[in-house]
Image 1 (cartoon, rainbow, N blue to C red):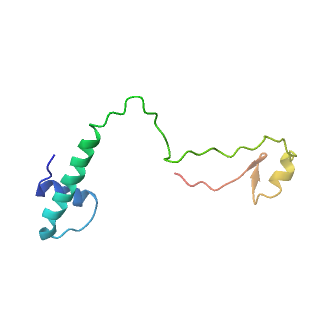
Image 2: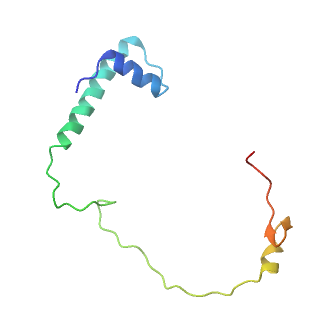
Image 3: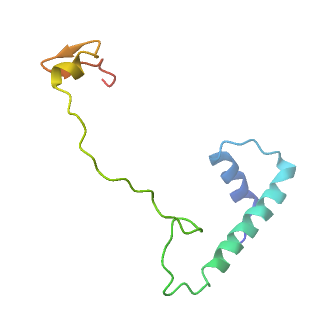
Length: 95
């Protein structure tokens, strides 16, 4: 898919970057080459390949769940600058 100058100009506008008129052909060419590469990726046979989140195998560090001392409500709320009806009171931030 080839990107023309008008599409490159529009992409620069949408990205909120200022591009000189003489630089548009180079940008259009670069965008075209990126899209051509992406089209080539669509030709790769990925049947049976599992999706992955990282290229290196990683194991999550696990820890045992341990029940810790449970503080009572009064103790927790004692750290709050303001409370109402047994809850933390915070200023309204959304109208």
